[in-house]
Length: 613
Image (cartoon, rainbow, N blue to C red; front, top):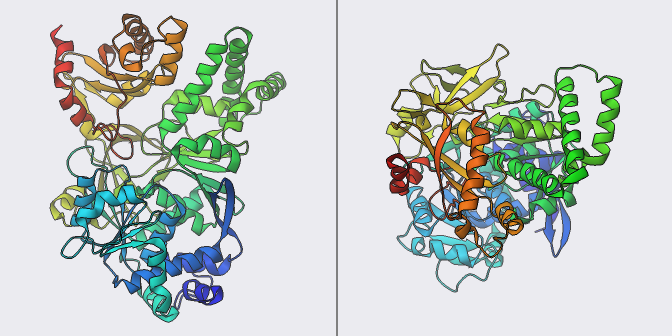
């Protein structure tokens, strides 16, 4: 099969839509970009130590080959196909192929345990499962074969096994060689905006994950809304490192098809810092913890340098903050401040931008609130952090600040086409074309989340200012109500204390109790360096967690940050856990949200001991 005929199959214009018509489905969006921009670079990826480019024409050929092989396996429109893999090019190609044959993508986090993978495969009645390698294959083997949920497993990067229903990647791709271009094209044209495109299993901070049903219309709407709101330009490039099992990452991919832009795919999460300097993206999307880590490293480096370097860093940061506040207010810089800012930038601030590659225009932060101190730091360094809001149930986008209309501390106004209001108890409600159909095979949970008028309950408590900008103040179900009747937002406490470079993660507790206590973990790199300077370099992080000098250090760090909190919010006692919270231990969701109730139950005796003292 020649490349031109493959492109013709996947890149034909949408049926009856006309060249200028806006795409309504993901197949139409894909056909539009591959037709209009065949020579443009769609993706960049690392291979044999070098970055390689893939054009939209080449992407179209690869997707069509996968799509034809799915048809050869008997995948029908509406059937579910799973992907269990880290973020990589093949994940994106498989997703595009799945939706182009009218099937439904079921993303599974690669960090999931075998039992969690089996549950998703069974609940979604998956017909075909793509797995990244032999390690992921082991998780799904019990769910493969005759009578099992997944009748076929395709191993992307590995030899697979010579067993029925298990295919290595080359063997899978060979299956579709006899499938006609016309058949694939006809199936893609029959897809409608109301058809299901994805089942996205929520992380599940409480209870079992639920499968949010997202349609083609949902995903195309948010792709267009994000493109319009962020005013991206066709020469932009981004670095993708978020997990594609989460719809937030796929929103970035679909937005880059809509624009279209180039997506560089990070090698792995451990190499993001290196890849940022290599790719030099114009923007990135991440979660607050990524920005917190950069902030911590910068402050730690300056503090450890001491002397003149520390004083210079503090001076430059204060100059940057003053300049940023004036710019934010639309006011010109006085000549003296402008000169100071130029010197501060040359000597200190530009180094933070260089850590992101040197041409970063703005960065999106989502999934959780960003601490005000973090936003101020980056703004001072010339990097605008744009906060937004989305949840799986509204296709990962409802609100976002704009690069030229940004209110730090808020998540911005709603995107055009989406309605927002507050319930009587302050919960934020949404309605619009981004709202899911409901939860798969769970009508009761659907009715609890979406009312009869189509309003989606977000679970967030917030306030809306006169300009329509939303500020999230807490999670509805995470509110701590003390024995004294005070309603406390634990996230506010946790954000304040996490600004300590010695604290990695923290969980505030105190529901129905007299005061607030905390469980926390140590930042390994910083506490080990501190231990070295204080003659404790022979001790591990777990040993340092019980070391009196470390407990005294953390006590002073908390006392300093308690000044930012009301007396009833301040942390009165704490315990240091021997190791960091993790997905594997059940402490965090795959999107790194704290499983608060599970963690408090797990350490109930430890928490009780603080109140019993």
